Length: 207
Image (cartoon, rainbow, N blue to C red):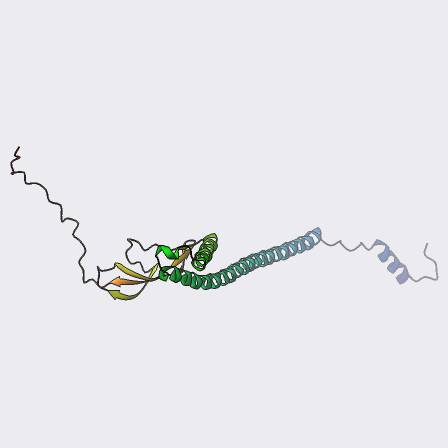
């Protein structure tokens, strides 16, 4: 029963509030879409971070290689400068040995023996550093190993004289050999020319 003090309109309003249906819940698709979008965003961010890490790693490796190459280049330049100074000293020893008297009376001279010993020690030091003389015996002029400073009468491209010994270190030229080359005024021997005399087959052998 509705109390008399309560009007019909109020009673009707209370009944409507009781029987009013609950609002419809949000669609389940909205709950699924939101986590999926968030997961995709995280994946994209992760991919960007991974790509950035890869670029940073590649840059770091390149930096290490360049730094190591720079160190090797500086070491080689320093080594080259020192060895070139030693080669000047080797030239002096070579010149002293070449210009010293060659008679037997000078063989036992302590000064000459001392010079020869120091030259041998210097040669051994250079050899330990893989420094070797450039061979010019029976060799034609090669611009990769020889430096032509003039010409003398001789065959074309022939090494006529050696003015300064050249050296290599490993497979590289440390200092080219200074040479004089032929000016082409002398013709090379003809390989087809048989200079040996052969007996005439028509000659009779006499006893």
